[in-house]
Length: 517
Image (cartoon, rainbow, N blue to C red):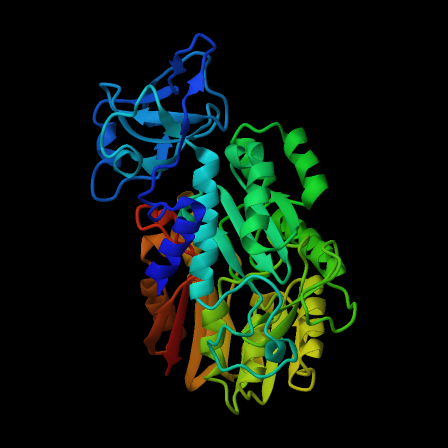
């Protein structure tokens, strides 16, 4: 079914095979003398071309791999360039940025667009707009094949009819484009009901914003687009901050990175980071303040949007944190739902209450949510009210570490504990220190689980997930806690958060379900 969807998308984009093998070309530029003007060439250092011709070709040309740039005038940020080996033979093409460590974001390799031959200096040349259009269309078709469709929910879902765990028919919030995972590096798009929220982290995305927006509208049928420039990452791209901030004013606030975090609180973070996160949460909660039980996903894009995930309603704030909702844990929340019948559940770092609400939907008798952010607690409480779970779910503001210490002092335990902290290891440099913190916090969480109960614990730190050390750390934490654990499941982000196997840096979320004895 997925193959058919992909083929159909590419065919309607121009009758070509799927975009991964389709030439995205345009006529060569005319210099005015009647001769074609060749594209600038980014020539790699000796041996670096192997990074793009092997079994796992990199989607990035890093600045250190570049020997020289050939072409006059010199290419600017967002220009299309050819990527060449030392003999100046083209091995692919992409978008250039002279100020970024990602010197070229590769769009296609030679075998995809030139049949493996050297790029022509005359005739058709790579066409960025055509390729972006085709890949957006493919992304829409892929999500539809996964049961995730743009627009209002089916009538039964909009009426709040219960959905079985994992069923997508009652879902109107999801990741539509996932940067490298959909081969559009630096472009992330989430669907929130009838709104598209764009998170931009690359100069080429900002430069081609208008045409990207046009393609999104055409292929999704949605007209509301909220543009969220990731200011910190755009500064690293060399974009003038005032330009990016101007774009933010036009399309929404920004300033956070694109490594989508799992639901988390500011607990156990440095004080400055806690303050910044709390400000963002307050903005999100203000935008998500009660505005009636609107189940359609319509409404003022600058305020609240009520969306559905597996039949559960959430107040999402397109101008709040990130893109307004953390959809990456969708399948993990659905998994939790089937485990909670007649259970007492603790959801720590609950943010909007995603795990807590699924526990209530699964038949939990008592659900306690904890978050260090007052705005998050207000949002989770609002979401419980939207679903009629206020009699089962209660939320309180507390530092998670302090809460666990107090609960241990009072000898409190739960049948199922969820621990979904914020990103504790933002880089490999901080991994060792973060691992100690993960270990200490998880050991306390394990002590709160009734013997034979369950712990669902998460890491949204790419450095931790990519290290492969998360499960071994949990085993060490179990020894610290004097408990025995059995791994029941290791999960990650939902499948709409696509991952390019040649770019493992895109893998950030780990979700582990443990039995604790």
